Image (cartoon, rainbow over all chains, first blue to last red):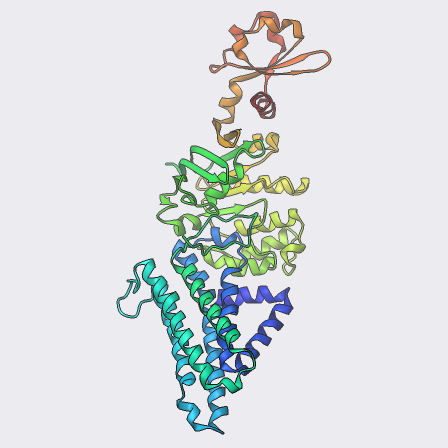
Length: 221
Length: 297
């Protein structure tokens, strides 16, 4: 955690516009309609995972490969948890806002599905990094093909279903054409899933390459 | 007992191949690493400190063992015993020297932040200036201060003196001598300043290059190497009096030709004609390297 905060401090010290962008993003996640929050989270969560600036010190300070992976994972983990937290704040806001006018909305699908999806993502993520739910020290999805099915196709299906259902419920509230909404949601979910796949299936610590510091160390094999 | 061993290290970086490097290091010694540009000095040093992995590609081979710790199986302990001063600072350029100490120091057992601060003062380095604002010489000093702030067994230094001013070079060489004086630590130091290296190094590892492959041209003591070579300055017409197999290189100038002569046993007295012997002299390391590399290219 200390490491993460230090990295963030370093990142923002010389790039304050990044801090402004992040605050703006966080505010957006909280105030936006919950339907747009997912693609936004998906896109924003995907970027820091893949575009992290790496310095050589990480390769030479006394850490085992597991420590290095943990250190990197900490960054990703906190990013996702932050988004999850903001998603929950958004949800609470929606609940409070809607409860004043329309109590039926409280038991409607979106309210249930959104936290369910957030939870699914977190659980999938935990499973994939080896922090299993059932058996300690043993991955829940041992084979890459299962990971692919669980992380890409199932979330894809859930999200597609959710998006289509949601469209019928709140068609009048849509400000963008439904088909665009669906495409964006599907893309967002695929990006989330793909980034998780990248993180875990082919996780490999490569040689440090000083000529290409912006490396993708989450290499898919 | 040896402190460090490099066993059959083969490292592939793109098209370049550092091939089958073997050497060991006794405690209390300084190993000088020399070679022309592209011979693999930095690749070797980066492999030793861990920036390059031993399984980066399918063809990478070898093992590094430091004080009983194997790099492949116990990277954490292995790395904790190494200190480094590199050409390019490995630390984030958006940190101050003090932040470097506070951030990375705790990873090393026995890291003394006060000592680090004192060394920064001694080396006249600003504590609160970002690294990208420091000169190359200052970055080297900062790395040296960091390296000296914890008890390491192996000090790896990649071209450390090229960017240091003359005054600090003396301090640097004194520091290296002090490091090995306890007979526990060793230093590997690469440099193009061969003459300076000759004065400080006990052993030598000379890397050569053929096309895209780097290999060990010589490994051993400097004295042993120098015993095998002599320089002979004679007119061109007397060249035929020399045994051809002894001539390892030649350099022509207006009046004389200089020949680098080689004899494995150092038996120049009997093999060189008597009238030419007065023109015979010892070759220094730089001359040996110049002639050999010139011939190889």
